[in-house]
Length: 122
Image 1: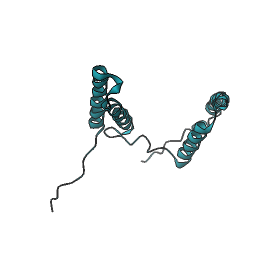
Image 2: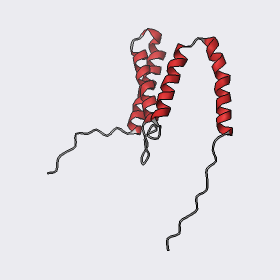
Image 3: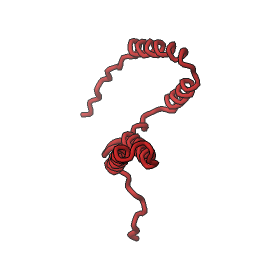
Image 4: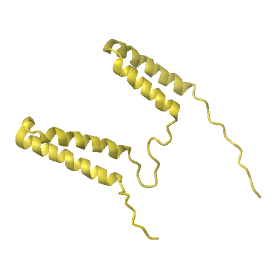
């Protein structure tokens, strides 16, 4: 019952190497033929996408970056991003100081962690 696994292991290193290769090739194509070559934007997009995936993939013995995000935070970020993409610039200028004030108030009024007594098992 020894079956060969068909799963391909995608590691952070492999994706990072692909990203570096694509970005390097995009730079070489740009320097050789300029913006008129259609390979340059394609390689650049794939390189940037692979770089983002490489940063998001977990390393060895680590959880994924999004493993500890609660659904409430995820929905809040999604709604916030939708609002930010729909708002005009002058409203965005108002939101920046409000966001900074909320961060300051959140850090000032953060509940303190209570020290728990240690249980001794004898």
